[in-house]
Image 1 (cartoon, rainbow, N blue to C red):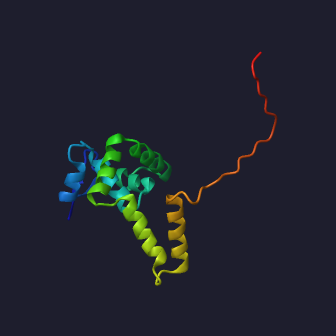
Image 2: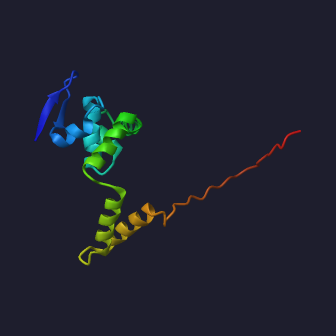
Image 3: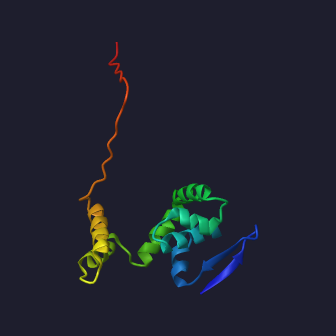
Length: 145
């Protein structure tokens, strides 16, 4: 159940309404674009660039990436995302349990199992991404006079 709403600049935005979103957006005073951003962000698995592209329809992907990043830094948008996950009862424990179920399912393809195990390992802090940083040139250290 979705309806189209025309904004002042004549952009058509789809807004999903219902009890779930009412509970999520209650008292947050989000703009129409911010509401759509939250919905798209959660629907696509957390990709802010794609969410901002659908919510704000920017002229190019670079604009979409920066708009997505900016939108995620808005406190009330972050509250709406957190609230949606809470209302849907999606907790870190629930996510880990379901990733583990994918990884241990005998019908799951090996590549998918590996991806699930890698994701779980990162979530548990088992796998730490390391980057090698190099420097070329002279380093001066001044310890004072």
